[in-house]
Amino acid sequence: MRKLNEFIWETHGIHAGTEQDHVKHGIDKLEDIIDKAIEANHPSIAFIIHSPRLTSFRYVAERDTNVKFIRGNRSYLNYPKRIANLREKYEGRINIKYGVELEWMGPDLGLQWSRSKIFQAEEADYVIGSVHFAPEGLPYDGSKEEALELLKMRGSLEAYWDGYFNEMIQMIECFGDMIQIIGHIDLPKLNVDMPEALVNFETSSHPLANKFRTLLELIADRNLSLDVNMAGKFKGVGVYPTQNILRRANELQIPVCVGTDTHHVRYYGLNFKESLEYIQEAGYESYVSYSKLIPENRTIFDDHELKVKYTVLNKGIELLNQRLDNDQRRIIPDFSFGGSFSEFVDIYRNATGMGDYNAIRIRKWGKSITVTNEIPKNSGDKVNGLFSEHLDKPGVISSLFNTLASEGINVETARLKSNNDGTAVAFISIEGGDKEKVKSAIDFANGTDGGLFSKLIYKENAELPNYHREGVYLLEMDGVDLNLVLSDKVILTKHHNAPGVLLILLSALASKHINIIDLRLGRLNNIGYSAVAIDGDSNVIKDLLSKLGEQYYEANLIEFHSM
Image 1: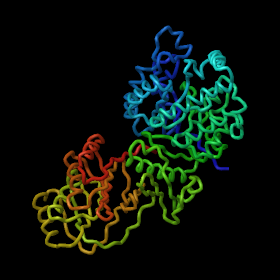
Image 2: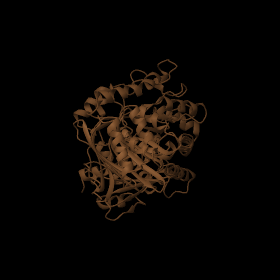
Image 3: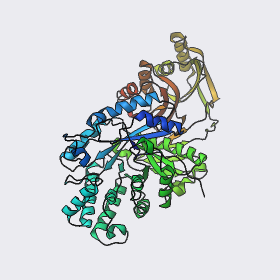
């Protein structure tokens, strides 16, 4: 039997750091928990904070404070900045994620209130939509007495659960564009029994069973994930959700997130392996976590080679998603797997095979990318181009492209390599072969930027050099070959393929002293493609990309957050 991981990439992680805004709710210090995670050699930790509630939605403990209480407002507003400071403090030691558990409080004021709270949760990695309170103002997960009071109001066990599912469906219809995960879908079992119609919802003809089936299908149709939450086990009512719910979710291809939903540092790290055992029992071999709202696939198995393959897959998903608008990112992409990645064909339903092609192709909304961790082989193509030895600093490549554009010479592709000593080399293949224009360009470069170039020569019928190194490669973008090794920040563009167009981008980068680490170009008819590995301030780069002009059909900064 394959060994399971001892660690999970949580989503519904640990509630902490909310100071005294909460009544004994998640008040442990964030630093204490991070130190405990580092001591346990965990690569990541996930914090989660509740969005503040309207004052009419309060637990007994909160009402007993005799304060008109907006739970967590001050600490909630400060949370993004505190997380950012911790990421800086612990950089290189642990990956810190944080999410928001968004409270559903009805479709009227509650909806507007919660929408406002999402705007205040800057940089959250994910949002969990949860129903804790009934419209009557009583909690589902409060005291037994509160639950029995609500049960009496509603008149029957079926009506109790029916109301809860109605609120879940309302939440998805209103919040579906703002959340990634549905929290503890069978939460009411904490205080009341599950009726027979729900226990056997797969086969029951009862209206409650039909409503629950509809709820699960709605989650699938909206491409939301389901929270597999160990807090129920800790509280003695079993994991949220039950196994039969989880099995149906798997049949509907609903991805699951796993989490312990702990509220005290002493419970951090409990039930990690048990959560993987639980989803495996329902037929899952993987689950998802999130970075910057983008899903990451995680294997349940302690298998190094498989984890490496999932890393490649996650890089590809991030890369494709960051080319898309926010509302398009939640749609599950289509996958094709080949070579050593072929085992994924059996894991991801509806995936297709690519034979011996050792790569992963991911496609959605008419766009696709292909990635691999195999170092590309040199094509052996013979081309005409310029070979350069130059200073490794911002503006050098822009200067070279500027020189070529001034002679009306269009660049086909480029190869760059830093020597890590302040110098770099490049080979730039060019269209045509007008020697006089090329000679004029070289003379111009040596005359105006002679201090940048130690060598600049024209080569005919030369082989494109192989400057490839180990890493995850972007092989193709929309089927166009690029073969760029991915770094922390990459710019992808689609643009009109004509002399001088790419120069706009390169000049913009040079104007802000942003260095180009590597560059790959491709084309399809009159459309040019570029993949540019760069180093610089993200906000500055995004501002530049927004000003490139109508000749750029697409220009995106891709930043990688997954591990």
